[in-house]
Length: 73
Image (tube, rainbow, N blue to C red; front, side):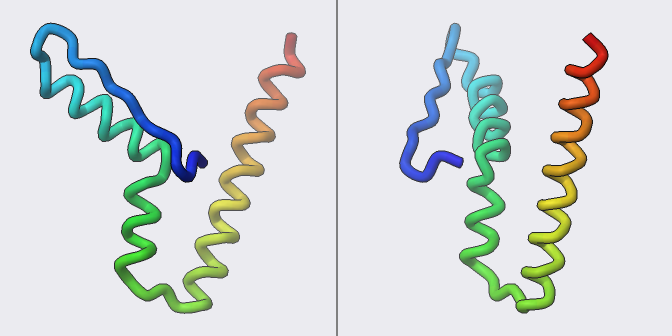
């Protein structure tokens, strides 16, 4: 994740709605909303462990899918 990086969205033809959708998608992908939620509310230690385990399992599953795609070719 980029800690201090900047996100840039170009508005083409005064289409502000489309630019806002693109910005929101980029922010979600970067994890900004998730970090804001974590800062705002208290997370119990058990919930923290569970969340970290889920994130780890998700990353492993994605890596397995990526490696299986590349092994076919």
